[in-house]
Amino acid sequence: MSADKHLQSWQERFEMAEAMQPLLGKLYRNQGVEVVLYGKPLLNASTIEIIKSHRLVRRFVGHKLRLRESFPFVEALSKLAVKQCKVDIGKLAINYWREHKDGSDIEAYMSRELASAIDHEDTQEARDVVLYGFGRIGRLLARLLIEKTGVSNKLRLRAIVLRGGRKGDLEKRASLLRRDSVHGPFNGSVEVDEENNALIANGTYIQVIYANSPDEVDYTKYGIKDALVVDNTGIWKDEDGLGLHLKSKGVSKVLLTAPAKGQIKNIVFGVNESDILSEDKIVSAASCTTNAITPILKAMNDKYGITNGHVETIHSYTNDQNLIDNYHSADRRGRSAPLNMVITETGAAKAVAKALPALAGKLTGNAIRVPTPNVSMAIISLNLEGETDKEQVNEYLRDMSLHSDLQNQIDFTDSTEIVSSDLVGSRYAGVIDSHATIAEGNRAILYVWYDNEFGYSCQVVGVMQKMLDLNYQSLPNS
Image (cartoon, rainbow, N blue to C red; front, side, top):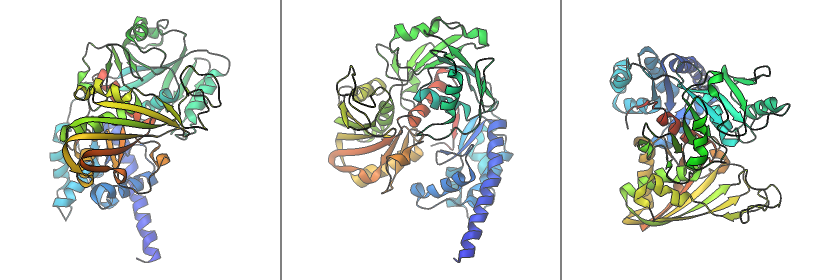
């Protein structure tokens, strides 16, 4: 291909991606349809991001998906009365082109594949959400809740609760939402309403409330009712402490973004969210590591049976460690986080059993905190009931990442060059590094990357939706 043809090809792709953007926006805002491409969200994606996402299809099916091959499906989708669902346009296009060559009857094909969502009656009401705390996880949850603006968004961020309230606090909080050293700038605008103590982000009005205890806020004063409070402070972890939220007017349920103590259900979305009952008032979304490893452990146990195993977590440092050597109540965590690898304990392996009882007593675990600000890795060493090899394990896990009920939790990469920073912003609970897989006989060792901030936050949103009985179809069916 000549140099001019390369440029012409790029121009055509660029223009097609630009033409796709308004259709994607209208589908979500008018019909509640979120379009993804092999799991990668296209809503609010830039032109370049849309082009790159098409190239990444190669790692799943062996060849890239051209925009001219996917664009007719977005067009056809925009003409259908499909409502309130997630549609993987990449899978639909790839499946279609495997059977057809001339591009005929695309609309008829789409009508058949999406029949369950056509003229679907939307009876789900928008629900109020309050973020109690505004640290790393709180701000990422805010980004996730705000990025999908419009009447179709059923999770409405209504308020943020903070301690303090010193002069200049509101602008500082707005600045932390606008800019993030790890995850980059906020995709939109954030305004400060000093008079009413509020933030306005992409048109979402967020009341900022200052309080020192969960039970001292009257949310109804701000028009908030039957709210789900997402406690991301990590201060209260048992039923007595988290139950304080339920004493505040306007609160109906509480979700903890950390492992819970006592009899509170620990939920890993995609694995055991069906355990959430309508009468459950307090639920935990477990830890980032538990979310990263449990879906993969479930997949491996379902196919091979797990006799026992060990999980070693190579974890980025967290806010509870010290920048420089100083006192800390926990062993070793007082030593400088940016300068040391720090061996510490983790309850993630044992916590797996709360979401996956079949593995109770079968796993041990430990952790090493390392001098990176985000993205971690779990090394899962398993003894299996059946025999296997590297090729078989990788083929199975690739299939699980594409065509199973765990496709939104498990991602898969066959890159030989991928490193931790490449996974910043990953929306999956865990990403299998297939080239690092070791498997022989009845032993398997899996290397699992995970964005311990953003990937975990996406899992939390899933639990939020389940707690509020907000259900969305994912099409095409696995």
